[in-house]
Image 1 (cartoon, rainbow, N blue to C red):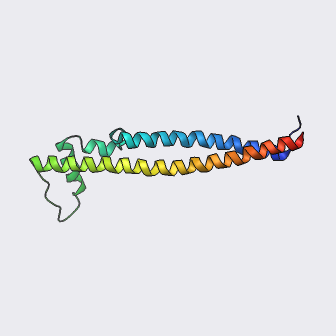
Image 2: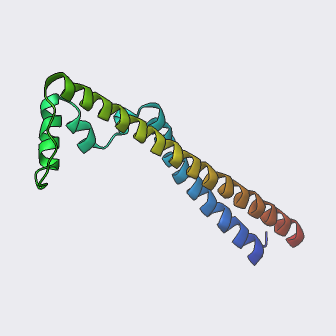
Image 3: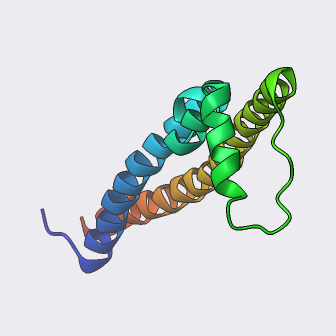
Length: 131
């Protein structure tokens, strides 16, 4: 069973495309999780600041600490409303980022599959011509 260089090259490319496929597939699964459950994948810093009114208030204080004309920090119901709206916006942003990344990874998977198919065909043709 003699192998020529073209077949070895094509099979090597196939091997690396399979490795790439597995890695990108794992990233795409994470993106799917980010879309379906953005609260789970949300950055820990963002998640923590929206967990209570006190944590959100401390975040606002530290964010405006160095400003001369710092805006007034809301209290009571206004603070809760602002915190909940901010948390919902953060979740929407997380889901959107997941969707963008999923589309990017699907494009990579498509290209990866195309490169694999072409090189698999080249390897099969090289094997037939060598025998």
